Image 1 (tube, rainbow, N blue to C red):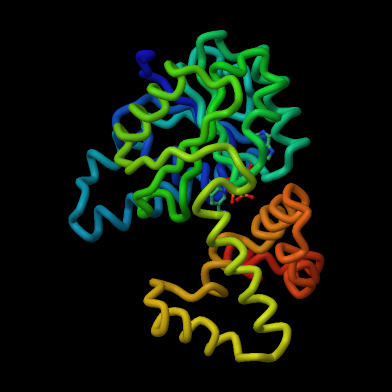
Image 2 (image 1 turned 90 degrees about the vertical axis):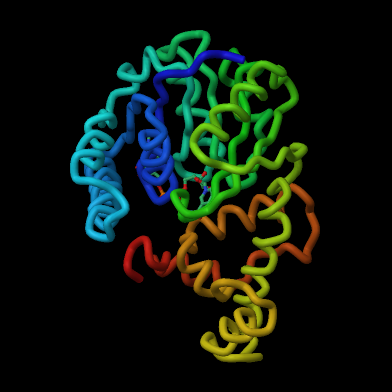
Length: 278
Ligand code: NAI
């Protein structure tokens, strides 16, 4: 197992800013990177706002909030990730975007650095193939909201070494997560079960079977889910959800996973949910 002191987090959106927060809270030095300075500032502010809430609720002191924030260095330059020991990546769920990113950072990050992707279901082995260090590449799938959800799904790619796996498990535990280990397969384990349900909830809505309120009420009261499937889709982001449904459909070729046309239409209309206020 490798010694990890400094951790990079690339992507400062919904998932990345949650990851940066819990990594810093566990005492690691964090380099927090995004190509967009605007998104990076937004992500950093989201962390600061959550910590401020903890201070107000008496769960954290002001001093510990300031210390935690001081441990997060923000940057838009990949070169600033040169000396991180371990990297969590949470950029857009598009294989092209992820591969282009890894082609670049494989040249700027030290050779010993482990890369771990927070993909919701893309192929770990395919992304790893462009890095020149596929033995040091692994999938670490967090759940939203990251500071709250306990689970971390770990997925080994074709070449992932035992050392990389053991390091990913140790780092995951050190930031407070419970681990499940899953074989590489379209959408892994949890999303393979969860995502078709969210897509199906959109079909139920589109077919007029029930109102959006009753769909969510039904699943909360009838299936004991903490929030309904439409509320969860709203939280995940419809744009990301659609990309993930498409992966399942394309990888399996099974028509039962076809994206609901209403989901497609809403994404085309820019209605992503809570993340963009639409
Ligand atoms: P998001 O859309 O909120 O944020 C993505 C961020 O990545 C943006 O700030 C964007 O500027 C940045 N970015 C894009 N390309 C980049 C590049 N080349 N270099 C640096 N930064 C770049 O997305 P979200 O929801 O945080 O998702 C990120 C990843 O996490 C995706 O792979 C997604 O499938 C996965 N995921 C999402 C979950 C969710 O509930 N939204 C749950 C679990 C995993």
